[in-house]
Length: 258
Image (cartoon, rainbow, N blue to C red):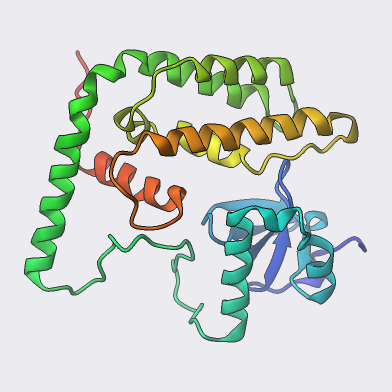
């Protein structure tokens, strides 16, 4: 494709944007900077600064380039495409600041609900936190869990792809006994694994290693999902996980010794 520049875009345009290590993803150009644009990625709700040469207008030409059978194998990419197509159709108001495009669990009740429903929701949240905290014995591995995920993140950065260290971290993680409590307490660690499910190499010679990382990340996310005892309100584990982690963290305060 031709190299794109700032002049190719206007704020609030739909675009394909490619963050380093990931496939081009549909998003909304929120703000134009001098050499880059601030993009909100659809479905994931992440916001990143992307150089203009890694931005493409969301049009028939770029759709033919990026909506491939390989990319469409991933549920999140399919959902993102569905969202942008619905937004482009005009069925959804995108003028509201702060609007979120991630699919929401049915557990999320709309504003202005009757008090009885609000109380029921509050009771449900507190009961969930009480139940999941029964797994507190599992937190004996929390320190190692965080360390291993930090090793994994630091081994796959923009400037360095240390695949042997990343594979070591995956092996160590596989041997740890996990729990729902451990996972809902450590959102950033699980989010890092979630990001790796879309990992892609920027170097052709590293493609096999990059594919191995992506496949191992997908397997780990499936393993994470298997530790959640209650049935999900949605078919999407990530949306449900975000909801439960937010509930746990909103009702929990870590008290640290002086």
